[in-house]
Image (cartoon, rainbow, N blue to C red):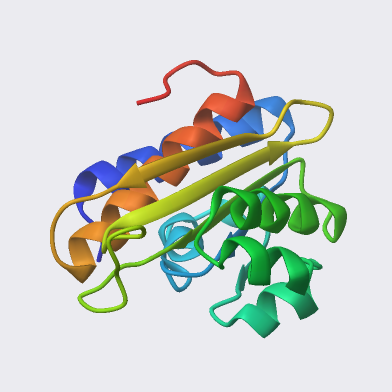
Length: 167
């Protein structure tokens, strides 16, 4: 279902969470649940995956994650600020120790000069740790952008466990 490198990354993240007694949750927009799917495709994932929410619309981000609608109006749904608020909101609404968020423009349409197709913001929040938000412009078609975002989110999650590898 997923490329081997994503499956291996998901396996590493799940193992690190389990070894460290950490729960994990995801809030996804442009990936539409692919991060959660990559994790839950692996047997035993229920030991560490608390929940995954797909907040594709702006209203879902507001309703389910508590992202202030004024923040979306000011910065746009695809922004560092919204990725931050998504991860923070998910952490506040779950038992997870680590929350991953993603918002972006997967294409092929919807891009602009300021926010091109492939622009993705990824957030990673861990209780009692500094928030990490990354900006990427991933190349390729819609599938390539979404899979690149999944791979990067899994790597960020692994880094948040304290178990090393970040790439």
